[in-house]
Image (cartoon, rainbow, N blue to C red; front, top):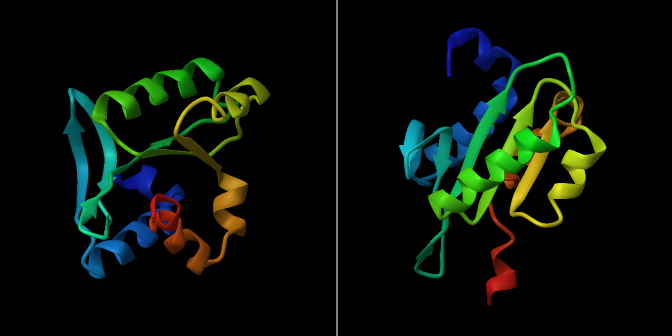
Length: 132
């Protein structure tokens, strides 16, 4: 991601860096299955590796369902367990509804600002106990 873009997502980037500093493999600005992601986070749990891909979107208008659907396709093609799409703006209602059908989490600027540092860090620790 370019410098100015990161400023809007600084807290999210800090949470990813925290995971990285705690031994979680992170690739920044990477390509997987031909798609570019701002970050790919690979936490491990019980000798298995999971993949969380992250993209950040700048804009002043709500992110559309088409954009979320396109991201969901990228997440699936990458073989990721979860995709996080963070936006400096909001999301359309249709975009939110798509998350029920796909392994995609949506974070808007307001949510990013309201989440505690711990909540942001925990975003990159999958609720892996469900896989037990």
